[in-house]
Length: 410
Image 1 (tube, rainbow, N blue to C red):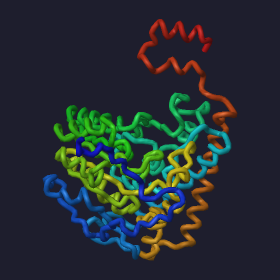
Image 2 (cartoon, rainbow, N blue to C red):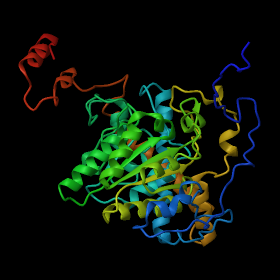
Image 3 (cartoon, rainbow, N blue to C red):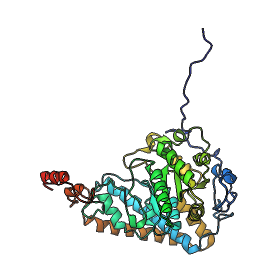
Image 4 (cartoon, helix red, strand yellow):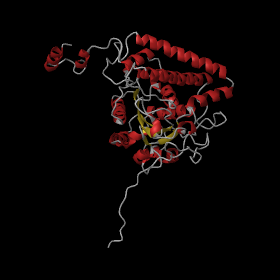
């Protein structure tokens, strides 16, 4: 008889399940202002600790402290608050539109607004984002027309993508927003390749790639890090760790690694973790990474620690796999409320102004929605001609596609 015990696999389990009372008191939250701010030409090996801590600027008293603070004026911060509130108003309106049958699908970024909105402020004209589906703030914090976003969500006659993409998969080369890929983690290899091409051409444009923490388990994530580190591509590699990948908690993708950011260390890439619900910290870290890329020092990997407050999409019911109070118990709080409190503490904002801004933005989104609905919705109104499916594939349409189009009568 053998004394060897049967083998078994370890399957990570979330700490809380539906019906549990979440308790995050044991989650280590580093003190705001404690993380050092290194020079952009720092050797990656000298800042290994930044892959294991969380860079924070705003403390619990609503003050900005430490070496990553004081990079934005009060007016710039108020603009950031408005951007986040606009995204939140937009999300709420589009979620309602989906429930009313005006579109088939929608994905909110509720609780994650600070990440894209703050990041957009460090980009320059010509830089290119390779986003996933929760970076609508990259567009809504710029001059990209909101009506075009809603037209695309509705797949109506004015949809700039002519109904060829899923709702919320926007695309705008002029605004540095590469077509969203539904195959996750492709954004990393696409962004690295684009950044390498920019460097080969001797251009001064950088690329930024975006994935969720669950996508770090994909092969493309690792392939991208090989090329980015080997050729020192001018790219910022962003991992939005919102704790849940669809219905799977982040521990499944993270495995035995201490953090997602730490995975960049094995490739010699500077890797940082930042409080994704701290607008000021996100801006400071994003600017550091952008300055590093523009100065020719290569890639940076950033993990944003945040929380997905809503469902994965309108097709998802998060109450089936996570505790009801988990989102409200999350220790890093609400990014909108935190920035509001900071401005009030500074004496440049008030609850009355905040309420007025909220009403103004809700009215703005409602008015733009009305404009878009004049062009139709998914189930009511005109749509792009089915014939457009044959266009924009080849520079000159080949004979077999012409024949198919004729046979289809479109």
